Length: 627
Image (cartoon, rainbow, N blue to C red; front, side):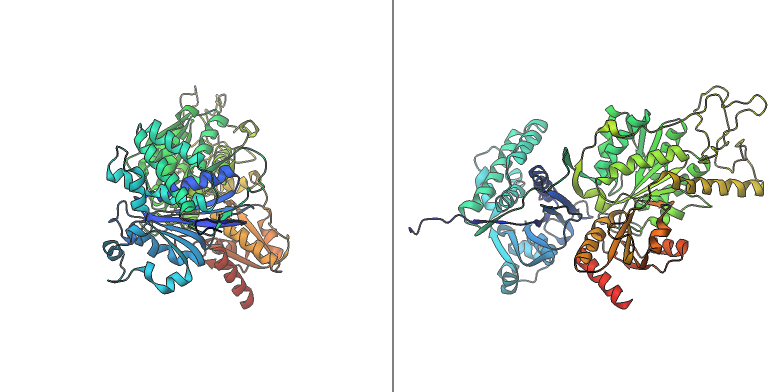
């Protein structure tokens, strides 16, 4: 055989792969990760993503504070999390390498932009003088580190184009993406089409589109010509339910859900919000859906936003406001106003790590008790929590359906993990979604008694939703306690107690409008893992792994937190041990112990991200051994 003959790398099939792109916040890691995600979705893989943003708007370039990351798991089978350990990492600079290398599995692939590992950049991210991690024998023994001069090769690929050096350097993420496409045998077509459409048509910068396409191809063919690896990998398509799918994150799913609500309720929807991480993207997405009967209003502060939404609801529209944990604090008084008005209102809380400003780009589930009790007086609301990005669409519709049926506020507890994370979403047939029924009294005037706005429906205890301007239905509205039936101001102690109990009972009667819990696994046994919201993925995966090892473990995810589903007490009684994993200090566990007198045990994790499945499995085993 000639010494110049090249041997094609062999192809190896894998069930799933976890990759991570990391680099400076200006290196386009979210864009590269998003394109790999979209391509994998088109290919037919099941996907789950975890974008990791820096908190600083513009940290000094090359520092660890400015590192942006994007993690993706793509699989040939159903998955629920973006993965635990990283199989392959693409690091654009030393800061990205330093802050993410510990996430890579031993023996994992690490592709680095070696041009950036110079003395200046190494010093910026805190490495000691004279040290270069790429020359560390211990690291090279632990990981398969591949050095690629991406900056130089990017400039060479674009040197004859009429673009500046800064625009050329911005294409480096496409070189890394091209290498990733080559390693995992992904097609380039979808990304090329997107680049030409976005930069060439929308931005009217065809030279930038050409530069990115060139660099993408250069990265792809570099893997081949440089014989980068002796093996390439393929992850076959997953066996998903037939239908049309798209990649969607939780914030976009909420926006599409609310746009669907406007159609199904045959009412305009107002989304009033003040920008706050990580909820702002809901406002951004809805602002582009005006053709579906959606109005958006960026208010001057959180209080103005919720008051605008209440005003829209009073006028007969669907009033929705969105925020994160700190903003929910500011909205609390006005949320109490909606409680005493007894008007439908939806409040979206995309939770983040706190308290106060906390870690604004990291996730947590610590607003549950605030949503339940964080208002003056007895102010009960319905509380819901989506379990995944795609589930946000259904929760948006569910929230409005419950709010208008029971004439009360509904709080949606999403979080950064769900809001920014993405997964495949099977686009529903909109015609199969039931209409949202709304009723407005038109002939409720009594010649002797006049209009009585607080007469209640005998089944739901909801009061009528009288529209302003309806003849003879003029009535007093305000924040003071209402007299039963008439709505007049009342300081009578017995009336106050009666109205307080009726407002609470009205929320509890919503239990008749929500589905019963379904247990994943045996319906009775040794261990029940009880979670809510975004812990669904890690808990479901951990329970399946434990069952496969021979343990009798089941799991339940709560999407309805107030009121709880009617059969929750019975489900709890069917298990010897109830473990409650939460990304807080045990808030749901406290509610469960209080209401059902069950000796539930919390498993808490407050590290700015959701549970890793391996860690959760080990925690469960430790608790069972102690029990």
